[in-house]
Image 1 (tube, rainbow, N blue to C red):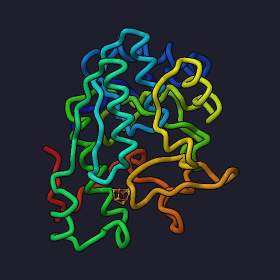
Image 2: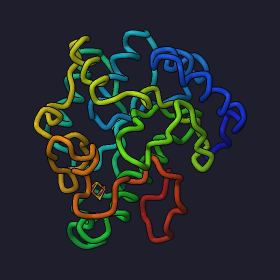
Image 3: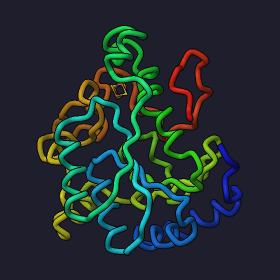
Length: 246
Ligand code: SF4
């Protein structure tokens, strides 16, 4: 992975500058600053729909990547198709090196029930490293109110381990801000959000929650795990992991 294109002090200055600016201002600046070396990763939750629409309105051509674990909901795939059809975007799909069945042969069935961190490493974190290969900047849809682990997220951050600047236009937004934007602009979004799924990942590790529950409490419910690792500093890749970044 290459060295980050900005220093920590430059990123800090940008984070302060964009704290009071709109998401669109940050996206426009980032698309201009990083050109063809910036990527938006889409999980096809409602933040993805907002960001795809904003980039479309800005006329910014930004590489878009999805990390398809092979365990996503049909509604999640349908959201991708709806956004492709509506906005004419091109989506680069990155998959784990092994299918779910191949993983079961090597690691045992339903790895997510026994070693969810290992499963996320193989099916999300390592594919992300391939998505970021050659990139200087990474646009994410994380928001501060999603979880305590995201409470201190800033609009611009440095991911030194992965060698990229993180661009996070929606950090200050609430769920109401997101839904208000989507309805105001008639943007397609993942219909699971209307059925109690406040945060959406892989089928085996996602469930609907009740009103008032924490936003990510339906992810890995009943465990302490609340992050898949994409938004945590990258760890050393286990020697046994066959999904070595290419
Ligand atoms: S969310 Fe669950 S199924 Fe998906 S990669 Fe992580 S542990 Fe595996």
